[in-house]
Amino acid sequence: MIPRYARPEMVAIWSPETRFRIWYEIEAHACDAQAALGVIPKANAEAVWRAKDVAFDVARIDEIEAVTKHDVIAFLTHLAEHVGAEDARFVHQGMTSSDVLDTALNVQLVRAADLLLLDLDRVLAALKSRAHEHKDTLRIGRSHGIHAEPTTMGLTFARFYAEMDRNKNRLEKARWEVATGAISGAVGTFANIDPAVEAHVCEKLGLRPEPISTQVIPRDRHAMFFATLGVIASSIENIAIEIRHMQRTEVLEAEEFFSPGQKGSSAMPHKRNPVLTENLTGLARLVRMAVIPAMENVALWHERDISHSSVERAIGPDATITLDFALNRLAGVVEKLVIYPGNMLKNMNRFKGLVMSQRVLLALTQAGVSREDAYRLVQRNAMKVWEKGADFKDELLADPEVTAALSPAEIEEKFDLGYHTKHVDTIFARVFGG
Image 1: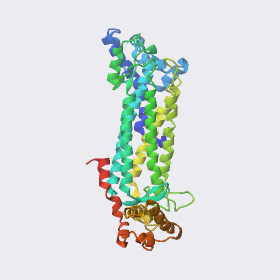
Image 2 (image 1 turned 90 degrees about the vertical axis):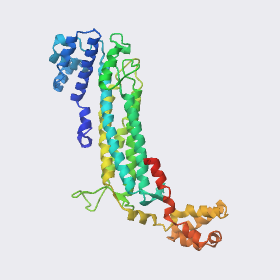
Image 3 (image 1 turned 120 degrees about the horizontal axis):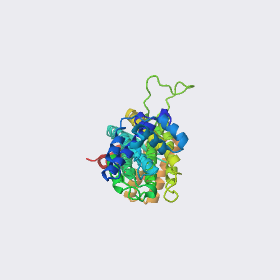
Image 4 (image 1 turned 30 degrees about the vertical axis):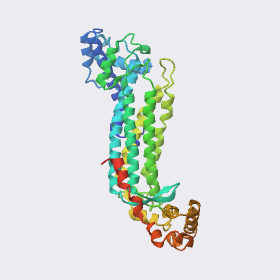
C-alpha cells in the first residue's frame, strides 16, 4: 500500500524485517522443542538463540534468493552465516517451507487484527460520544432518499455504533480463526517431526496447533478473515455515504471539519468538499478487493500448491494497512464532525408538516374510516403540499371529510414532534446498555 494511506504501526507488521524475525523465532522455538525431545543436541538449539539480537540483512537474503529462487532457503542460508554451518545443520529439521510461511503469516494477521480491534474501539468511542451528544437532536429520516418521518441524529450515530460493534465481534472471531500454526512437515503427516514441536512453537507464538494442515494451513480460515475485513470496509462506507449526503449544499445537516488553511477546490475558492468521506468510500473498495482472491485461495491442489502465495503477499499487507488507515480516518471524521441542528429542523419543515402523514392516516382509521378511504384523504391533501407548497395541517383542517372524523384539536395533536422520540431512551438502552 502506498505511504499516503498507511500508518507506521501496521506497516511495521508487514516489513521484511518483521517477517524474517518471525521466521527466526519459529525456527529457534522448533530447535528448542527438538532438543527437548532429544532429536538434536541442546547446544545446537542454544547456538541458534545466540543469533536473537542479529539484525537480519534483507539485502543479503534477497541476494541469496536471486540464486536459490527460494525465499525460505535464502533465509536459512543467511541464518547459517550468523549461527555457523555446524550449529545450523539442525535448523529446519523435519520441517517444510509452509511450516514457516503459513505460521508466520498467521502471526502477522493476528497482530494486524489486534491493531484493527484497537482502531474499532476508537471508532466505537467516537460514535457513542456523538450519539449521546445528539440523542434528542431531531432530523428527518429518509427512505429512498425522500423525507419519511422524524428521527434523531443520536439514533443515526447509535445504529452505526451497533453495526461497528457487530464488526468488532466478527473481527474477534476472525482473529481466532487465523490464530493457528502448523509445523507438520511435508504433506502434513508429521512423519519427520513430532507433533510436540508444533505444539511448542504455537504456544510460544500465541497460536493454536492446526488440527489438520496437509502441507498448508487450510485457506478457508483466511477467506473468513478477509471477508470480515470486507464487511468492516462496507460499514465504513455506509457511514461515509450518510455524512456525504448530509454535507450536500442543499442539505447541510453536517459537514466534515474544515481546518484553517484548508482549500476545497483549485478553481472555486468557496468549496468545502467531503473529501475525507469520499476517500473512505474509495478505501473501502480497495479492502473489499481482497475478498474474492481470498475466497479463490481456498481451492488448492491436493496437499499444497502455491497459487495462494502471490495473492497473500499482496492482500495481507494491503487490506490490513488500508483498513487500519480507514478506521482511524473515520474515527477522526466522527470526532470532529460539525453538526447543524437548525438546518435539520429547517429541512424537516421544508414541506410544512407533510412528514406527519402516517399519524393522520392512523388516527382516521382509529376514528372509524376505512384504511382505503383514510389513505385517499391523506394522500389527497399531501399532494397539495408536494405540488403547490401548501401547509399540510391547514389543508387537513380545511377538508370536510377529514374534519368529519377528527376534531381540530385531534388534528393539531398529530403534529407533535415529541411523539417520534418517545422510545429513544429504550433504543439507546438496547444499543449501549444501562
